[in-house]
Picture (cartoon, rainbow, N blue to C red):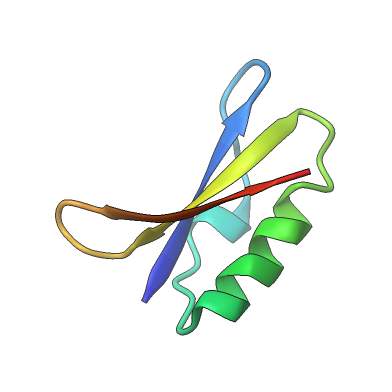
Length: 61
């Protein structure tokens, strides 16, 4: 499973997309594209939903 972390220009991200657990990498990429619709979000990081989280990939504009 995967989760999203958003990197923003300022402030913190308050989106339901970051709390969702995605079953596949393709679903996480689709969620990241939706997250990037917010102008303040610079890029999104997809991580494995583990403790500690492991990096999977960056999604940028």
